[in-house]
Length: 456
Image (cartoon, rainbow, N blue to C red):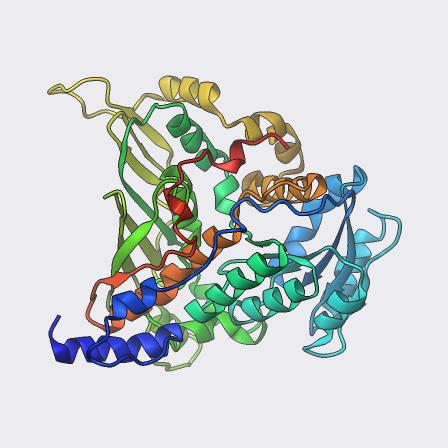
């Protein structure tokens, strides 16, 4: 890159990533690469908690939806919801009413203003704070809870800037307190089926993956009440990139052992023309400029040479998909619908996916042990996005009960979240390559089995 382009990229990095402005003699890639952490929280073992006392902040769509995930764990004595907090009192009261028959007593509610969640952390006698607020609040809430000795599990993304991400990692390393991003798609039946096949060698050597969050959210975004104060729409009025990468990149990172034998090296990102959301807003007589393109495509190269395509589109009218394609020397999977191809031999006729009977045989043979154990419970309760929310919460609570490392650690949480600001930087610079920082202190080089295979 020439000197003019370099200085422009350096200035943009300062704005997007919270980095200091560098001079023309500095190297912006080195600035990003200089992220320094010890990696001490990679396999964090915290003190076992017999009954995890939970506080939830944000009782909107997601917070309210998570409550029933705890029914079974409350009944078994593994968890108890001690507090609920939101700026809208009726949301907390509704949640407390739901829980009063599930446990010994209803949780306390904290609704005295935007800061009352801190009272719940300080005086609510909780072990775990679950953060379900708008994205811009996640990092602040995670930082505060950890500093008070409270584990945190936050909805996606975990943070919005590299400064926030680095600070959360530093606090977790210093305090020995967990910070987990609640990426539920990592616990879905299909994704864990694919992961188990990879673990068993069906896919051979992985070379490429494609993933996405393709979800027509236009009605949600333009609705005046679905998101409190339309907070999510506002994100689209000031940003352009992949604003929501983790539903796709989380499972793919598990497939490729990202942070456990490989990691992201660099990315480039490009956004399309914007039309879908602005046209939808006109139906509400709102003429707004939307900088966020309808479709963002981000390409990632890993240290081991693999490639990943990550897409984001919530503006277009199209069926939901996370794509979930993974390519290996031995097999290929593609989702929506879930299909499997086995590369048994090089031939002229290798163009057909497995038929339904063959696919069902593979699904039965390679269904992940977690779903073999819990699919009955999850299916019976029909809990959360086909059961994956229940599986995710079950794993989180049982790991805390036993003092085991969590399935998603703080480094993965921040790495997956970092795709958003890094993609914004690349888009702003005409799809310039942007290096991805190593949050693990070099420990990503250690090849180890993913903890999701651990029995809890």
